[in-house]
Length: 171
Image (cartoon, rainbow, N blue to C red):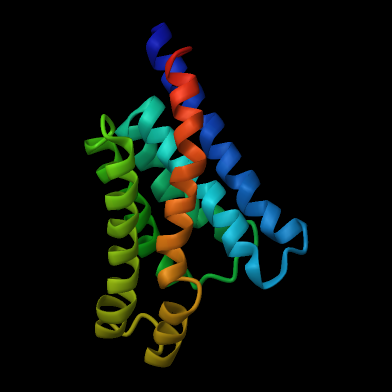
């Protein structure tokens, strides 16, 4: 394995590990009802940093593994929702990566894309395929997987920007 591939793999693994640590934080420390507003921005920051500093495939890997890591660390998210969270994460990563030269635009549009994918899947796809009872899907859409996804993605972007700017000079 050449040196660049090894760096890529190590950076991706470190950001995935950090993502899982942040997800565990919400369950290890009693953060109460607002844990989404602490854990969510930190996880979203990891997603954006991975896309900004390592690349889109690194961000994709973390995007798709993070929801399952959350479930394994004790999140109360229903398993049928995990693939849609993964797609929402990937939407954030992909849009940010496309607009990485204009980071603020990438964060705003990526956050909107993440929200649209997750919220849209809760309103239309999950009820259509009856993956969850309709009232559960609506409750999730109106609680943690609705507008909070937009807010936590934007805050994650605010956290990620200075880190990316600082590390771009040294990587």
